[in-house]
Length: 140
Image (spheres, rainbow, N blue to C red):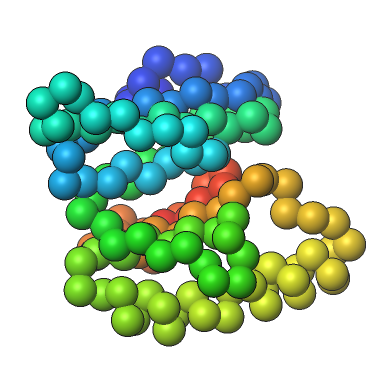
């Protein structure tokens, strides 16, 4: 993260985050925490995504994915949102159809709730690693 933005890049330094990303109007910026608002520029050519992560988190757990994503709100858990590249929505629906059961299983077995108010899964092409897990989101 220290290469992306100024921060205290230490696992022991936890803080809350306000994240803002301005992208082309055709793109979607997915990041950690809750999406508070999306604001378009006056000419509608760009938009800014405003995220808030209120649970103290180390900088190494902050992530960002930008792309022309299709968006799918999980039909069983509305606080979970899935993202994929265009034309892959049928595959996304199939791949994520069981995720609510996984959440329920882990919350039951661990006897604790998922700590974040939302969760995002982002499926991209040619990822640097197979799976990358961050605060409130994972990139595949």
